[in-house]
Image (tube, rainbow, N blue to C red; front, side, top):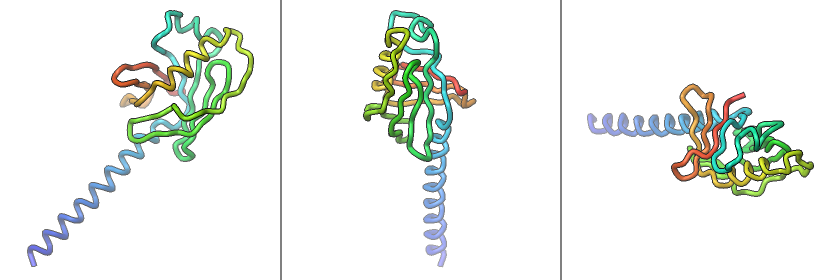
Length: 145
């Protein structure tokens, strides 16, 4: 009898821990939801304000619909959100509008190319800063709008 109770308690605790792990994972992904504005990008020798003189790029996550969209400082883009835990993938083709950009498109090109290199993300504990990481290098930083 004692053995049966022990097995029942053991199985219950396994089921509970599985459920908590799942809800924590989806909570973490849902922290992405909303609009984020770029405030740092690595790579180019041009200053941030030089790359994006008129409008800072934004990214919008809708985790319920598995959608990502935004504006790359000139054109709008949209695509499928591919996320697993803190791993994220922007290599899937995205639909992008084709307006003529005032800055010659250098900021737009830099933004879209850097986005494709991102392999994971991290959100600060206060939920206000989103970092995009490639390997172990922070490539882009966004602030929650």
